[in-house]
Length: 497
Ligand code: NAD
Image 1 (cartoon, rainbow, N blue to C red):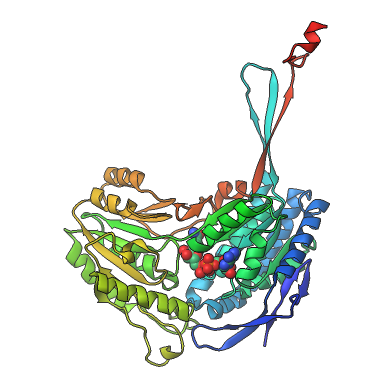
Image 2: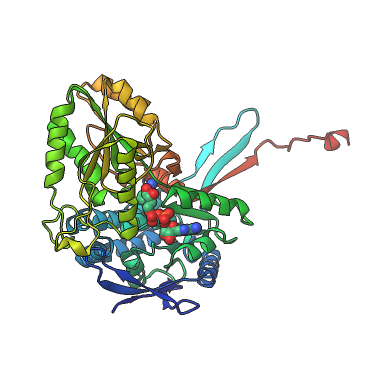
């Protein structure tokens, strides 16, 4: 059986205490690998290596062209092994192979290449100062050691989303993978080795809360990029507050995406868009559309088509190229979703499709759960307000687009929203009022490398992707020099002489 080790200082290592854990394929329960489980002592070791490497300047002072060459080579090597990585991602996470092939692996390659290329364009800025002849300029510098902690739902994609800008900006990285899906991110270490990455620049560890906590409270870590749940995000803020050194952080947390459909929208296209919005990756997506606000004038035909198509999505073996919808991640996910649906029904929601685990062979060995739709009258219900993180959509009838926007904004999350309306002026005005980090107009669920992605409120802090995403990984230094012949004599000592 394959054993995935820790990758520290360009070496494959065991853990301090020799601990390991098994990884199982959620579609069939088969053990697919054994993974070395890092301890707090392993975190200390990895951070010490990253700190020493950062201070040596071997990476932070390397010419951007040379840094880019190494990262582009990693992207190229990943391209060469794309199918193998896509298959492992599928077996590790339960996503359909069609998704890992078309989305996860290409987007991971693109993150490495995109940030490698734009890092060559990091420039400073000159700032005109009023009232003094001062030359003032601002430069951007790496933080030092960046801790990257990622979740299980888009394993390699979110791992590369975090480490690529961190590295491109000249930081050294200690990255902790999700204990549920560490395979592809861990194997990226091998590609960094083959691409000639200097030792100690990227260190990859595995394990759950213990190494995570040790990493986010380590005094030599100066920045944290975290993607995961609101609960752990809050604990990271607390750890930073109590740590010897306060850390810069990006927190990419949960969401409860709204989808507002106006009376004039293209029903056929909008139904497809809602479907992908809550079914991609079995709905285990932070920016999934999980709250549909549907205009009363199109409610019945829209719902008929939506239910019909939701029931036709092909659920099955994630490794089968025909499969459109795979398995949930694990028993915990299944229990959480099941419980949320039971509670919703007790609270007055009406279950119109799904809502029950699929147990007919061959699906009985996995955690297969169908697309589930709940009609609701009350926006305050838990099923509308809380992230369920599964293929569950609530639908509420609205009398106007404005009402839909008000209900969409009535949420403690603000990550993403979609709005569908043919009247362009109305569409733009409504989009302007939506409180979300990304608003999709007559489209849905697209996150591109070039545009910033992130949220506010309980969806977190900061942005990933785009030039803004690169800037997040650099601290600003303002520098100034007085150009007048004489320095100002504030206390008058020199003038008095
Ligand atoms: P999680 O918060 O349970 O775990 C995320 C990572 O944090 C894992 O690597 C985990 O081991 C680690 N961790 C756990 N406890 C820790 C601690 N005390 N200190 C430090 N690290 C710790 O999240 P998850 O279940 O893996 O992922 C699902 C969540 O992620 C959902 O809420 C989803 O919305 C969110 N998510 C957000 C985005 C985004 O871009 N906003 C993207 C994907 C997923």
